[in-house]
Amino acid sequence: MPQFRRLVLVGATLLAACGHAPPPTTAPVPTPAVAPAAPAPTVAVTPAAVAPALPPFPRASGALSLDMVYPPENHTLSVRDSTFVFGSVGHGDATLVINGAPVRVNPNGSFMAYLPVPSDTVYTMHAALPTGETAVAVRRLRYPPRNAAPRPAAVLDTVGYPRLVTLANTNEYAASDTDRVTIARPTPGGTYQWFLLPGTEVIATGRLGGSTRIRLDSQIEAWVENAGIVTATGSGAAGAAPDTTPSPAPPATVTPRIQRLTAARVAAAAGYTDIVLSLSARTPVAVEQSGTGMTLTVYGARANLDIIRFDTNDPTVRLVRHEQVSNDRVRFDVDLRHPPVGYLVLWRNSALVLRVRHLPPIHAASPLRGRVIAVDPGHPPGGSMGPTRLWEPEATLAIGEALKTMLEARGARVLMLRTSMDAVALGARPIQARRENAEAFVSIHLNAFADGANPFAAARGTGTFFFHPQSEPLARFVQQGMVRHLGLRDEGIFFNNLAVVRATWFPSVLCEGAWTVMPEQEAALRTPEFQRAYARGVVDGLEQYFRSLAMPR
Image (tube, rainbow, N blue to C red; front, top):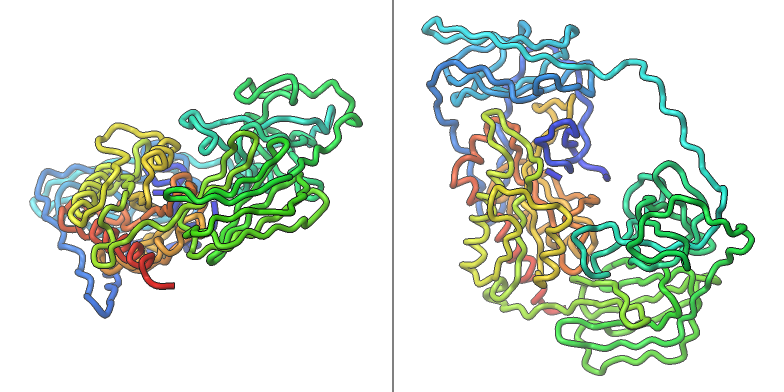
């Protein structure tokens, strides 16, 4: 499963859980303690088709085998009132009681309940068959301390500051400056907002715990992890060990360096247009997208531009305008001929380059023909586990393989980012897609809950996540396709800061098509038919997205 708002949150304690679902709804204490029957999934209706219902449960008739999958043994709960429990008993005709509360058993032996958290930290399961066979199992839990001593507040260290520092690369999988970014945040440990290239010079003004405060310009400060800082400029280089000692130079000797922006040109090439700005040194930058435009902000800079050259037949960039919005900040407004579909920021030969991607050539009748699609079957490492121990990476790989087959049948070239059950590093996936010049990126996931969520009241339908505005249209089309084919509740699309959807060279989305932890959905996910339905929804969404790019504007 996949720091922003959502409908349900993946449990950080479920090693098995996707780490990016929406925040949990408030979970009321159940009265009575009996787990209610799960309501039938909402069936999505479109003018074109009616989504199929979930397939019936298969029947299990083996020996009693009590398996509480969640919470696992010695799990430390993050709540003290009520939470969900799920697992299986091995036989569909069994009766099950947990701590005195009857729990419904599904035909495949699975169960899901929402129960009070036991005061003695023990769930006791009693199962029985009509034949008289019985079984008992115990699950022991832990509680977080009620009155844990608060951690002492970190104190901002300003000794030896301000000082000039250089930002470093912290991504072990990145080889080029396009991928090697230092993340800057508006608050320590906050959400990602700026992506700063290695070698960028900034003034550090203090340290707070594991973060360093830096100035982007005279008006804006941000925070970066200490590992993203190398020794003070002049005594270290990008890639050196993180600087941990204050500069001996008196703070008064550190003055802001305002970089001079003296020339600009716009040059179209095959597949992209470069906006090239001559700068005297590397300085912080930010890119924003809106409608059919982009904004490039250059911090700590002053522009003196009389001429900007444009290519006559540029298919993407229509106009670039600039404004000195403050003494040390320049804003470039880029007017495009179509909505943005991808960009890169890089340094080349003492110049800052904003590379804007052109629209791909689209066949109106076969919009996926010739397109390069990156398919990312989510996990491992990690991944959620269902009541009968269907592991998320198993199901996402099967869905990804079905997706690959369908995309290739429609003429696309597919880049599979995971082809076995071996773990693939999260940070490596979007980088590989960029290096293969992918035109869209789809990550396949399945959802789970956080401790305390009521699975019969919380969101448990289909959702799609994106980060950059260029990916929002793709997210909507893919969401519509999945809802149409899966028949689960439409939970909507979500802006979310997730690692695999932060790449900028292509639109990218993360799909949470179904929920591994819901018994009826887990059972469906084991079937090739439901796996293909998930894949078909994504394919339809991709096709609609690329078809929209071919429409007259």
